[in-house]
Length: 259
Image (tube, rainbow, N blue to C red):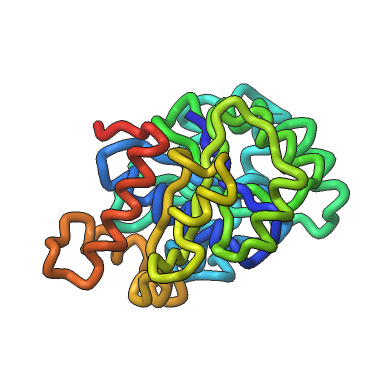
């Protein structure tokens, strides 16, 4: 199942932290998970997951560039797909990270992605239970094409009505669309109950991931996988219980099954 996470704005809707929380907990629930990104920035998912922004030479021949190279020369077998990924510590091979491009020319990269992404993502998904794609924000051709080919689309929004207004003036189209509000504050005037009154499309289709300082710190420290593993089964006495439950609710909303 290919699940695309996308936002109409950059840097405000917690798209990357949302996809990390949901995909990690999906893997912890014994699913085989792949995580890709379409951004033209190098490894913006590697720092929170493995604590490295600049990858060592041993990881250079991995990720989306390796998949595109291999796609041009041979069928993407399970062995190739798994070899092109980085395994995240603590999750064995249940969670495979495909780092972003290292190409220098954005136009060439997007041209290649537009031509190859459907086949590449389909091949990756064939050998995983769930494939999560962190899609570049905005309405670029590659982003729109990924959204069109995904099995489910998660539109990440903010409790800022200007952002939501802007989205509904130019919504994306999918047969299976959900909404997700990250860094969610229930005490805000713009909680989900009030937002659903103003925007009926959000009703029963929206997940909320509560703001959690320890989770945010783990992203900066490169220890987000360890945080999720440690707190997966935390009790109500834990300060992280509400956060973990909100992520589990999002997983249920998306219809992700526990293996």
